[in-house]
Amino acid sequence: MSMDWLAKLRQRPGKAIYDATARLGFSGAVMYQYQFSCDSPTSVSTVPPAISLSVTTVSQFDGSLGFEHVESELTPDDTVVVARDGSTIVGTVVLSTTRAVFVDVLDSTVANDPSTAYLWALFVEPTHRGRGIGRALVQRSLDVACDRDMDSVLVLVAIDNGPSRGLFDGLGPTESTLIVYGRCGRFARQLHL
Image 1 (tube, helix red, strand yellow):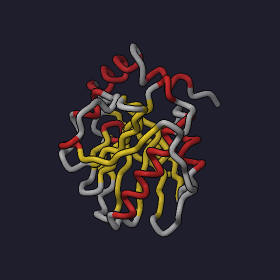
Image 2 (tube, one colour):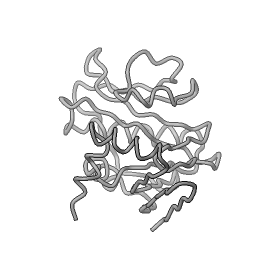
Image 3 (cartoon, helix red, strand yellow):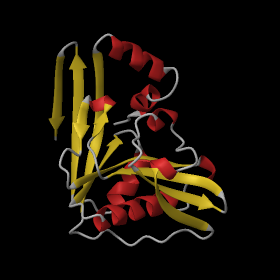
């Protein structure tokens, strides 16, 4: 089954149509939720040649995450894992270990358990994709969360985001769930399949 129509809803003008219908009270999302346990090691990842990784907080981060809408949702204590090619930022991912995070498209808060971290906003510059940078960013984030005594790490990926789904499936999550969410006016329903 093709999910091309879902991908179009995340791009212009589909995003404008989705936002307009959401303002009228009609919205929905289909996402995979991945859970990684700190008790179950993930596969080992290596950093690609010429790429360096660093870990910082949002308050100390000087750069762009690649997603304008995400930056307003960050708190100063959120962690950013950064990939650089020389001095150029080529990839980032956010790890929230000290708070729950509200996810607009699901109209709910995730990572409510204080021992669960939330990994989100993974971005790799298009010219650097396919080199293992995303995998290295995620692996380093999982290591950071476990080093901070988290029990698990939660990740949400849109069903039409094949590259990210392949990445997270390849890391061997301890659990994977399909979430279907729909809202019609004041009536909302979220199913975990």
